[in-house]
Length: 129
Image 1: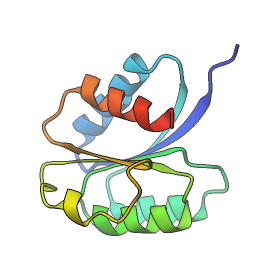
Image 2: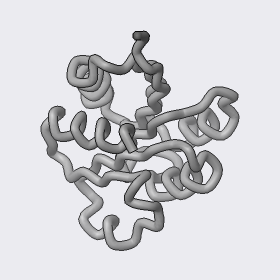
Image 3: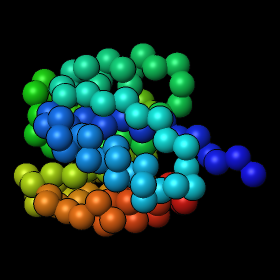
């Protein structure tokens, strides 16, 4: 049986962290064929997500990065790409959990620093819903 193909957008301004996320998700989610698009900047990610013709299965974003902030990006994606699942990984988002207006079936918020295994488990749980 072929692996399910998933399109993942990562918005993270630190290249080392973005690479670790990609490598970790590939390694810890071998049941999926993952295709990544990485952006350092919220504005570039917004344009890509907004104009992409393909489905975007998962957005992994920090709350703080150059350009459009993570909160605005999450709001845009949840409104215009309702099928996209979202994982917010941030060291700045302790109060974000209370104000997020996205269904808990579509979003997970993980506090930095986190273990890649924890992230992969949250992603898998989210994708399996």
